[in-house]
Length: 354
Image (cartoon, rainbow, N blue to C red):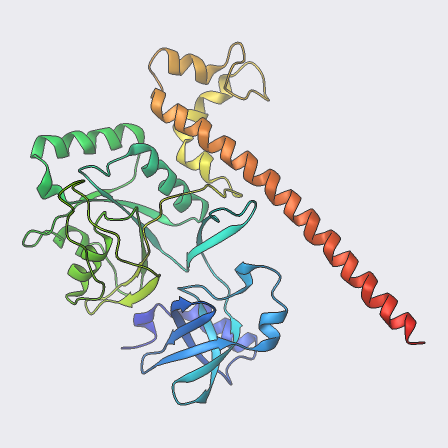
């Protein structure tokens, strides 16, 4: 294995030299467990933790390492290391943190392609698919829809699912896979050496089975299909990066029950570009596309040019984005006020000494 097999490139090497990090070793975070990290190099894996100064200067959770990050580190004992710096990320897949207003949870970093996995039986859900697509668009990560468990439905049902996706989601490639012999060959053929792919999807859609099939090894445990609900049981409990023998890097994820939108860079506009194209013909520039007179989007929904379910999903996600933005501003204000208070306390303590 080489650094290139792990995804290392010339841009990262230039940063290493320019920031005088060449005295440290470089590696990639392949898993995280309660602020301890496994860092991988072509030769070894290290149980790592953050240098104290890096920990205490962190202003938010995003300043800590995440699976997919490149880091500078030094070994202080056999197999143990301290992380000194995190390299710049060229992409971050994230969502709204569950149960935490205005907070973002990083799913993985430095991703080239998001593999949006949906089982074609009971899990098939176009609204959820658009949510995962928005997460990819926010991150400028290329999306690829992977329909799994196609052996559980008929050929005509599969064609119907693909047609429904194509009607709602334009210009996103779709690949169908199954556990049958050579069932993952279509996906294996698109995975490129040195590129990083992140598996996205709900619990039980077959992500771990897919990973095991592509790697040719039992990397992740898989659950049997439940006879009562016809769904795979959730097995994966943490994120992990795995380098495939055939080339390419895969990051597996625990199934996400909630896919909260934390869109700060126009991901919704990209996902629903077809809908928003009609907005140019709205009578009012500040049209909310909900109840205004002469709204071109509402007119297109009414006459069938825009899918009603897609429009409804767009409205729901837009409201979530607005709430998230509001919560984020409130959190930043509280953090700023807290920072001012800390400075005042320090100043008072310093004055009391004299």
